[in-house]
Image (cartoon, rainbow, N blue to C red; front, side, top):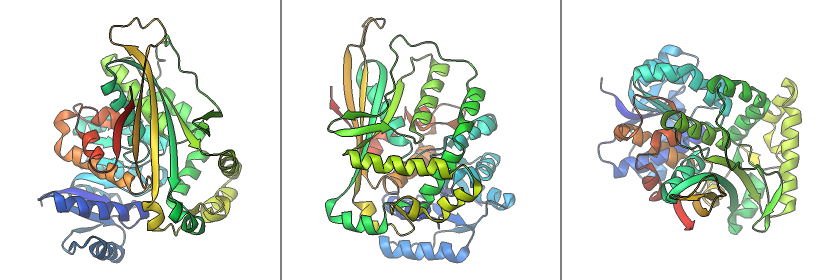
Length: 419
């Protein structure tokens, strides 16, 4: 039986459902694209196709439906053997991701996901980079809001810098359109699946240094002009704090691998979240404090997972409205600093440039756009990716492809706004 181009696993979940909608939209434009959906429940998968048919106006009744369960290795292998590229939307990945990666490598199927969980991602690199290379397949995590905008944003800035880029500071900001703010307060802005991944990330955050030491036992050479990390600070009329997501980890791995393979000077990177006022900052600090304290024991951790609305003060729910998501906007301003071409790099940096990456619906709109375009790149452009395969970051995998340009023309914009 011939393989489908793409199979979306976890299609009945919140992110998976949006990936199905986006795939139907893309398939309408790409004649000949074959795709299917997979999960545990035949009835739920059929219901997703019916819902997508109504919302997109496309007849999806002929889309193949595959049954697979993370607890059944043979079902996962059979699913992966039907796909050229597996799109894994079944999280939290710490709990459910590894069997899917293992099946994909065993079936010689390329793999992408939207994990924002550094411990899972780096564990997969330790365990499956060698087997993936032997199989000639690519395993690429963090192909969503975590961490395409920042990881490829650094690549985009470096490609336009015309010199040596030394450091990048990224500032993330989001806002909900005013006409949807009341609805956002009533129904939340973040789905509980994302919250659950955050809870497990906070719980196991101390595992990362040991994993990093196994991946990179040798230290990088010292930088002549080191980027100093900031704590709380003011910028552009707002308050900024270090962003605790996966972006720093992903960009570090990208730059470390590029240095190891090409001896290129690694770009130093720091990422911050920009809040419009002090009250917003204090509210998020309080939620962060609750996450850290309550993640310490199994009982209180289960409270966080079972009652997300209570502990997030209404921000996390099962009932986030499409109108709110579609009217939530984000931007990342990446401030680059380095040297003009031919400059003496022992002296202070003499060149600056600012890039902006922006879009809407960061959690489920821009995320599935980036995810599916990453999958399509694996389908059509592996000749522009580093052979022979392996567990790679998005920057390492896609820096020489046209992914940035295609994302730019599909609503995830990459721009140079200041030279």
